[in-house]
Structures are given as structure tokens and as C-alpha cells.
Length: 114
Image 1 (cartoon, rainbow, N blue to C red):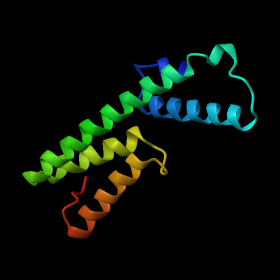
Image 2 (image 1 turned 180 degrees about the vertical axis):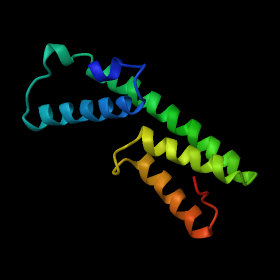
Image 3 (image 1 turned 135 degrees about the horizontal axis):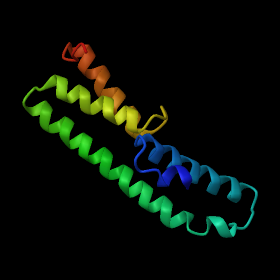
Image 4 (image 1 turned 90 degrees about the vertical axis):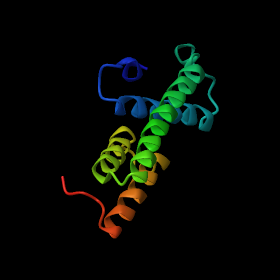
């Protein structure tokens, strides 16, 4: 929760916090332990974090799509790299989506050199 509340720090804190909330919930479920009092608001915070992450991903994805229509390859790459930095876990669907687009751009020769 401390990490989640640090809004002024890099946005990947939001993703890391969300991931840790999921892990805490899974550990409690696996051990069949009741939810401790300090984690009672976990479900609400988890939903808020997921909503914010979805909004971030959607905004970058829309930016990528709109730039692709006018072939602004550098801006497309910036959007994809931003997604990868906001969702640093390589198993995250958002990271995989951005990675796939980068591979497509590189194979077509449109990925810019930074």
C-alpha cells in the first residue's frame, strides 16, 4: 500500500503495487487464512489500481494506433517503450503486447534508431 500511495514516483510503482496486492491475496487464499484487518481495503485498492493501469495502457495504445495511421514511427516506438516501462513484468499482457509490436516494427524496418 505504501508503494501504491507514492504517486509522485515512477508509474511502475503502481504496477508493482498491483502485482503485490495480487500476490498477497493469493498467499492468503492458498493458506486459507482470513484477511487481516490491515488488508480489509485491499479489494477496493486493487480495483482502483487496475482501473488506473487499464487507463494508462489504453491511452498509450490509442496513441500508438493513431500514430501508426500517419506513419509516425518514432512516436509509435515511444508509446511502446512507455508501455514496457509502466508494465515492467515480462509476463504482463501489456508488456507482451508492446513487445510484439516492437518486433513487428523491427521486422518491417520501421523501428527507429534512438
